[in-house]
Image (cartoon, rainbow, N blue to C red; front, side, top):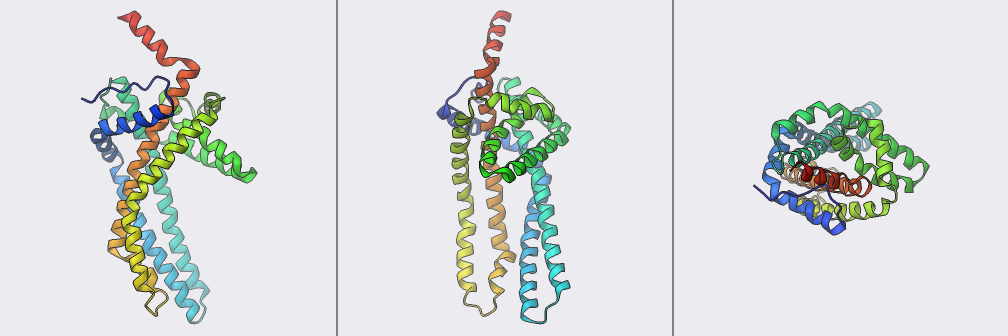
Length: 296
């Protein structure tokens, strides 16, 4: 069994980053096995939709180019565009569900890990994930709506709201609050700590983006080589053929999977951020230690 990592305590930026990667490193096998057992089927659907969306996009653009080169046919253009946007809409919907489930599994895994002193219970994580999926989807939709409103008002409120909402899912998991109470508590918990939270989220987000980019390098190299070859072809649609290339599609799926896995780092770090702020404001972990000493 790996060394137990105490979540309920204050941490600085360096400690949050270090403990996040330590937690992933020491529990990666059990953690990712739990993730794939629960999310695997939906993840495969998302991967399949990604492939169909890329192929549909290629076909739509080719159709539009061919129509423009010959006699204009608005119905053909509309049909191609409708099919492409249909696949994209389905893909984004499934991806939204996938990332919602990943957030649930990650945070309920941490909750079970804390409850059972370092050994997460799979059945417990699975039960809570499925039981609260609609609650989390509602939270996600409300968060998106708040971001849209903030963007309409001004760009900077989007940044402020996005940092505040990083606490939403941890609060919903660890305090079992309703959607409305969760949003309200986000603003209470982050009060006077927004800049510190921004610093942690920014650094971890940058690290995750850099690590995730590594998985995109093979597909980018293959894309550049294929585009160089296609540019010598007289057919203007030849360059779009890469979107139907099996090798390119596989490389993109691997990149998608890699970025998906690294997104877990962000979720685990949000748990550490939540407990850090909660300890500063409420001393929950300190009081629990005192109670345990009394019970002992």
